[in-house]
Length: 80
Image (cartoon, rainbow, N blue to C red; front, side, top):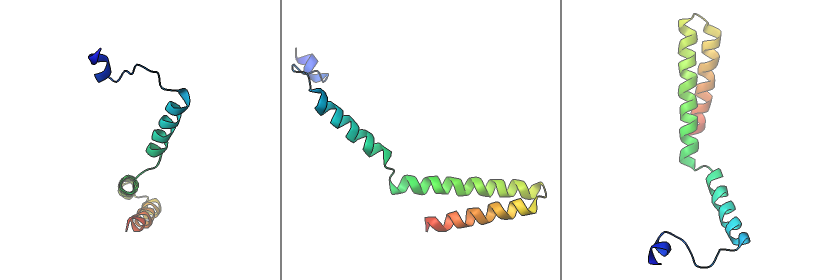
């Protein structure tokens, strides 16, 4: 029976309430993003906006290119 214990099986079942509380606590921890994850998301969005700005510039759509570049600049300021 030692192999069952090492696999995580217990002789007594865990009460439903305790298990549910542990699982909900784990889920809540994962919902909250760390500062580094938020930073990375904003950085990716800035990069995406700059790519769109460059694409608009190549297509001679200068107003859209300027708008996207300004958006990227304002989001980049949030990082600092």
